[in-house]
Length: 211
Image 1 (cartoon, rainbow, N blue to C red):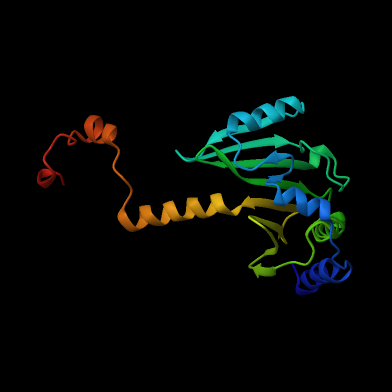
Image 2: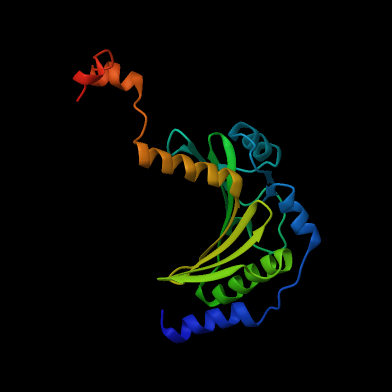
């Protein structure tokens, strides 16, 4: 993308809309919910909400022992963006079987409507949460961040595609995840007794004989 196009994109998003504030939206986040899901609910509870709303689960996967993902078509609650359901996805990320992140993924209909979509998303978040806490550009990615008590809201735009993401992250749970990952890196991941016993065959060996 040329410099002129990048500049146009930034100017349209940052200048054309003056941030305002929506008390209702802030109360929703303060209350610990996003995109129709309460943070820290289990994967089973989230699926129950999805089924009650009649939405389709596109993916239900396990990335690791602690991380699980659900992807559904559209959203479970209406958002004032007038986006066709076929152009929207909701991704849920669970850590230790608690909902940590809800992400809205939307795609503009075509390149010509890309700036319109960017403006629409930015205005929606600015109207909801006020001024941004920060804005960053890394390579072809641009991010705008809003911070609420316990929740971080991030809008991400890839300047090489028509995909936009709005991620709502419950920060206390995210910090717990990062702290555990840091401890594992610092001390080494705890050995699994079953793996040691049946695959490595050394679980019963004295410590000084283990390699």
